[in-house]
Image (cartoon, rainbow, N blue to C red; front, side, top):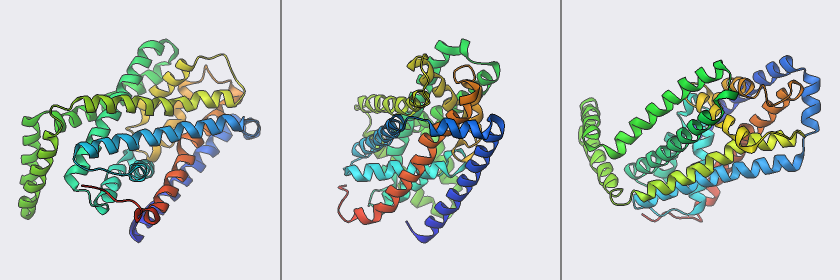
Length: 333
């Protein structure tokens, strides 16, 4: 990454650290710092290693889907490039409001690897369509099954979150499947592009040619949705793993993962870096009947460490190593 990008990443990471510190401070005040510390110290380390393994599956699945989208667009990428794009998506989404920085960062890395912008955008749209579709499906099924275990405030938060996510999914589907609507959007883009209209028209034409490759190969999108389901289930399973790491048992796997999927769908579209604050509050509301009061603070902190802090450090390390590894891997277009 260039110096400017490194400064952006450092500034974003500092903001995240401050927000996490504040949230941890509030949790410790709310739940008694001594009990929280005691619970965290007694957590089963081997179970937390399993949680990290689940997050690795999460990153690999996203990388596979990005690679599959690029393959459809005519680019063959090595595995490390797939992992690098996945890491960039998570890292920059975590330090920007509404997870808005992930896709632009991925496109920048793809451009540096010689991948055309139209190909990269198609791959990322397909990956995002599969991710959003899987999230809506999993959380909707979970809400239908476990709505009786959810308080009114959590249900309202979920209704707002799923509405935003379905709206995003509908817009993405238009970009991929509706030629008429896509032409209208393209016309608006050309109108506002000013002196860059010719360049914009060329880019739109290339994008349309890439979209045409999807016709007759829609089973590719179904396979991507299946991979996204595995990706999200791995993420939601971390809550179940933390539950057992704290020495608790009795609750079913499907209940815990289902409730976590509802929390994720509720707060993922909020304009907060990494959902900091909202994710913790949503967790406390959703799991107040699952975790004992003495363990709730520790459960929130450990879950966020394993699904947010450790992954941010891991993805930052992958991005830091990417310039060193780039010379050994080439993209075939």
